[in-house]
Image (cartoon, rainbow, N blue to C red; front, top):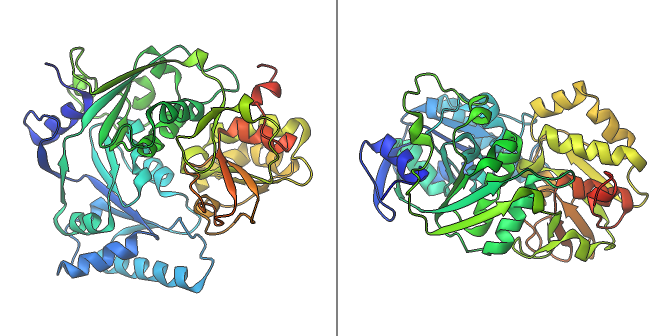
Length: 420
């Protein structure tokens, strides 16, 4: 029997063949934590009796969750993070530089086949770059800082075959929400979700990041795309001799296999209060919206704001609706400025602010009021996620979110783009 992509990556790292369920210990190539998890990892590091990080060149801190700090408590946690970083010569991406899952691939030399961990569940985003990336807890992060290693159970693999091309107004967010809706919140628990097929080549790197970002919402250990021409434009392939490592064998064995025709997908939303409560937009059209949030590590990249601006420029944000737009990094923000996209967003009535996680987890910049309804491009809609347990969150693509901001009700974006 052949090997899945995840088996090949671990074999390449360990120098031996591995099977699903096998327990292994591997060297970690890069690990990062943010201001929400980093301070806890520092406490755990000291409880381990460690005094110095083993290899500071493999550790990164990012201040993004409460950025800039909205209160004294957050400020003190960030001081703790910066102080530990100074003591151990750890590089810090500070306030305004962006969200960790965007900042790391923008600034670090990612290579296919790397083993990356982050003290945040959405570290799985980086699987778009044909590498293993997964979220870990603060205690495990402390162990990585201390030893440079971590144990894993080799995951079973789930194959998702893609054909065709997404239609105008349908985005990769619709694809991953559809998959989560089909699988359920625990349908892929501890699996490696491997995307294959001719449809893969039609997805941009930003779109792949969106897809990988949300595999954890169906319980997956990681998501990963194969190495192709799109990936090669964003990673360091120097010294890469055997590219077969980054494609599964044709006779590989999968626990689950799914097939999706991209051109047959339609806009969908995840209705409150679970990410797998996925419904076609047409079933919820007309539901009044109070706030729209476009951004986060899921959908805060250039292509997301480009389509949002295209839709918002038609009529602007409807009076009475708040539309908040937050690019995922300073680099994204600057590129949007150069393209005059920020101008279009502001002129349309959006509130545009610096890169932060902010409203996604209900820290600041958009906490909802009781009874309010939000359409958000982020990744979770659990009760209270955006700061108020008495509010409702509908997850959607940037296109659907923008269309809903224009109309003031949940709207199929194809109606504003000339299709659907």
